Length: 213
Image (cartoon, rainbow, N blue to C red; front, side, top):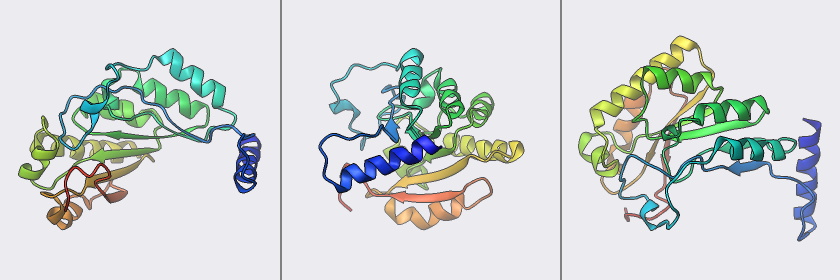
C-alpha cells in the first residue's frame, strides 16, 4: 500500500511539473483478454480492427501483473471481445486479486449459467458490468444481434439470485448504451432492473456515435 501511495505522489508531481518522463509505474491497465465475440452488435467497431482474433495467454497475463504489481491498483481484462469466451478469465481475475489488484469485467451475459455464475463470483471480481442494451425484444435484439432478449434476461436474473445466495460482495452494474431505438425505454429499463443484487443502473452515451439521437 505504501509503495502505491508513493507511486501516486510521484505521478501527480510529474504531471504538475510537466515532466516528459514519469518516475512512477502504471496504476490502471486495460488488458484485453480476448478480442473474440459471439455477437455481431451493429454499434461495435470490431469489424474495423485489422488485428487477428485470439486470446491473451495466461503466461503473458501473469507476467504483466507480476511486473506491475507494486504500483498497479485496477485492471479491466476486456476490450472489444467477450471476456467469458476466454477459458482462463476466472483464473486471470483470481491471479490479479491475489496481487491485491482490483478487477472490473464487462460481459454481454450470454454465457452466464449455473457453472459460470459460480466461477465468476468466486473469482473475487470487484465490479461486473452486465451490458443489456434494451428493455424490449425489438430494441435489445437489434443492438445485441445474435442474442435473444428473454434468454439473456433470464440468465441475468438467475445470476443475481446466485449473487444473493452466495452473499457475494461483487458490485453489479446493469448498463444500457443509449441509442436511437432504446433511449425511450430508459424508464422501463430502470424499473426492470431495480431489484436485489443490482448495485448500479447505468445509462451510457453512444461514444462511437453509431446513431444520432
